[in-house]
Amino acid sequence: MRRTANYRALGALLCALLLSGCVQAPSDAALYRLPKLPAEYESLETLLDALQSGGAEYAAPTSGSNLQSVQMVDLDGDGEEEAVAFLRRAGDERPLKIYVFRAAGESYEQYRLIEGASSSIYSVNYIDLDGDGWREILVGVRGDLDVQNLSVWSLGTSEPQQLLLTGYSRYAARDMDGDGRQDLIVLRSDEENRAVADYYAWDGTELAPRASLRLSCTVAELSRMTSGTLAGGENALFVTAVTQDGAAITDILAVDDGALRGVKRSADAGKSFRFLELYPNDVDGDGVTEVPEPEPFPQSDPEGAVYYRVCWRRYDAAGRTELARETYQDAQSGWSLILPESWGGRVSVDRSSGADGAAVTFSLLGGAEPERFLTVYAFTGDSRASLAARGGRLVLAQRAEVVYAAELYGGGAGMIDEQTLRDGFSLVEAEWTTGEN
Image 1 (cartoon, rainbow, N blue to C red):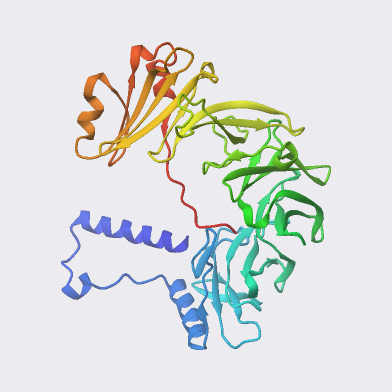
Image 2 (image 1 turned 180 degrees about the horizontal axis):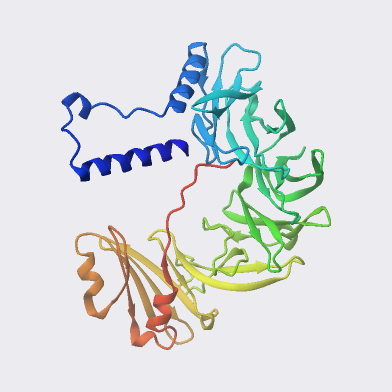
């Protein structure tokens, strides 16, 4: 933050001098000289160099969103960033070292040191769990036999205080009870390798366990935890698991009067859905999180491939469900289409691909033969622009190497018109993740 301000000021000064004509031509040496770091960052670099000279080496986290060896974070909320450095010193009884440095005038000084028995860090996060304005440091480490432990450290006291140490597989922070503070949901394995959710909340003096709940999956099947909202506005956590046969299982967790409960438990319902690499999301922008529940389209050819329409359903606190939207997702070509409610179970889908790209055709069933009414194309290659414009096709969108177009047969045969098609069509970006906590 301070470095950014310094660079902005330097840039403004250079612009002023250039405009006034008061700058002399620099020498060759000056042209290739690296910019000088602000003084406080030079002092930080000196501190880190001294630690490495003493036998320490960087030990950056390997998963999650915070992957740097040195991370700049405003831990105490005062507007100044602290520097958090992750190192290890082999041979020490507690080799893991997390140094916290804070600004002191025009330099940095060591403020806190957290030490651990592990030699590597799996993930790190910064979350204010007790509401005091200080972010706690959540450190996940992986020890021998791939056992993971989560430790939560508070820096608001004179010495780092460990608030929690527990085994875990995944965790997520969410204000589950609506009190304005972030709670902690930790997923772990029980004796039978089933996934269990432990709910921790701040009780005024400590981060205390409140309740536990067994989930519908094993720890090995866990895929993602998604913070979301129920239909009545209650906060919830959506836990998605994927079985070995490719079925998606979703548990929705909520807190009621201090107790953790399952709003929706796939195992209880006795129904699972095909996993299409989709996760709970607010697909219609109404502030409520919907769960993707794919259903197969009717097949015009029993021997043909099976395609799915995605039923996005919202849930309330009692577990009642309501359909919010149906979509077709073409993950291979990167597009999505909102399906009109009138289609019901009367439409089949066929997908083909070739040298020029891919085509998805929607057909109306009920007659002697399926009656096609819409084809959506994803054209690639050098001729993609001309192919998209051929025969009155409608160009829907473009990427660098793809042109998306559509063809309505008979004006859509009463099933969909051009405006509905354009409004419902969207591109799907490939999701990139740095891993779980």
